[in-house]
Length: 445
Image 1 (cartoon, one colour):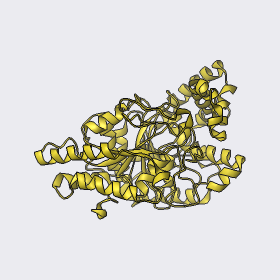
Image 2 (cartoon, rainbow, N blue to C red; image 1 turned 45 degrees about the vertical axis):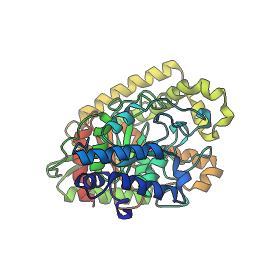
Image 3 (cartoon, rainbow, N blue to C red; image 1 turned 180 degrees about the vertical axis):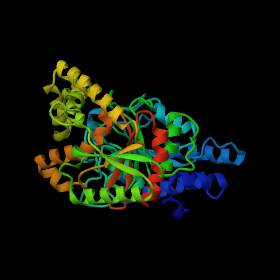
């Protein structure tokens, strides 16, 4: 059974359906690997062993009766510790929520369970999901697959580590400014950021009600598409017969290339050339509306901290000493913005979104490096506050474009460790983006 534990979710689902793999044996093997793994407690907050075994036994019975619920029925996946799980603590990586035990599952977890997915455990994350680095001294900092001395990316840090280290077939995370895509990129995985509002946030510990999204971290784009459908509560969509021939991509210029480090830039340039070689047209495109003091990217200040501090202020200030200082400071920065600042920022952002939609309507996706930096050094983050702030802002800069513009987005491995290429699609067009992503994935491999 051990040879199956490094397979992707779809491959495992196919093996369960054919009878080559028993879902109970598969779940037991994952649990044994998790419980015997040296990094277990840095990756998982909680192993939901009893639930996983009960769900696996139900999946076995459905296989025997010829009544499987979906292509992923019986496949074990992990869940970021901000998705409510009935009877299991859900604390969002923060001592502020210590002892919080919900009495029902989050809506997306209910949907996934309804399609037969096995919940194997809850994973560590950045505190309250407000960091792109994955460093959390309050609970645990998961490992980076490519660099033992670096952070794994966040805030879905344990989610990425659970898949990269073979401790789950796939993982579910959340993305408010890059929190699925950064850890996916830094651990050589696929990450899908969905459009805000496309997947339910019911039962998810919130960070930003306007920007929070749910998304999978997986070993392939096809896996991401299947998990997206399951969380949506719909049958899988058609992902066959895809090609890059005739596809048009916009290569985003300017801000996403500013201050980019050598390895991510080289990996991105190489990936773009492979997409061209596979038949795609790639056109450099600038979006001035993103730039400058009045541009969309500058609106992140009043919009993100302004909202999240307003949402969390009373809870935080009642027990501020329980928080990690860098995260606390970032939350409190939201007090620097007024209601007029916030509403003016939204007006500018809506205008920028219209300009983006008009300019990008003729392209199948917009390309950018997923992150302009490699995973930062953990020890230096702990000792150098300026380094922490600089690297955190840089880590999330490129991914934030997709959140601000209200897009769906994919990150794909480029073949260079911890370097991803991002494909951004039109709002609510996840199915089309996944199909393009499957073709791009083939070209990049």
